[in-house]
Image 1: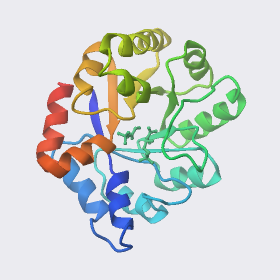
Image 2: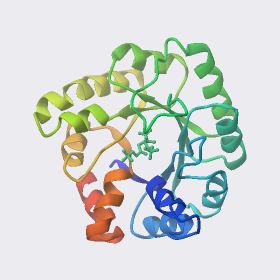
Image 3: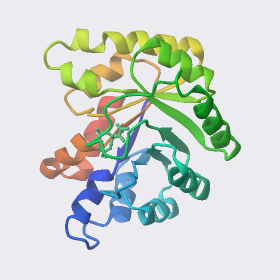
Length: 237
Ligand SMILES: CC(=O)[C@@H](O)[C@H](O)COP(=O)(O)O
Ligand SMILES: NCC(=O)COP(=O)(O)O
């Protein structure tokens, strides 16, 4: 069964809008776990627009499921990983100014550096994952740098799902087949939702984890957090 890791970035976005501590990110993460989430994901961006450095440490103290920290592996990010030792670090190639993640790694161009980063993560006992598009060269490149898992960037799938879901999933199926052959674990994320998740899950049988934030928190405004999480879990069975 694919695990649901709830991304709580958006809770921090709302909190930061007033500069106080409402809603409380730590409490929400604990409640997500209480409602059935099997992981908590954060993406602490350098400008701290949502998750702050303090949140990274505060969450470490309370998360009892899989703590997944995503980000660009610069010095700041690696220090956070070294000091908090999450279950998983997901490497994302985002520049500091992007609105949100919008592409996977070029694992060939950055082979040497990514190899060093993955080795370091392994020495710290942290599972590594690399955010990639469905392009086969970059998945083979991911294998070559010694990463444990890939996270398939599902933005393009989500964009095309309504128009033609069979066409939207096609390259993901091929990419997953290749990752399976190479012995890479498969995670997925970005713009997954109650509408498009079930078909993605059905089509990618060995899916290990999905991290979902934006749509899930938006759904929670109408359905409440507990019902929302249960609905996502149902789709992952
Ligand atoms: C890698 C990925 O897809 C997520 O981390 C997503 O980008 C969330 O980041 P934001 O919440 O800052 O958009
Ligand atoms: N890795 C993807 C993630 O954590 C959440 O992405 P989104 O659901 O906020 O688009």
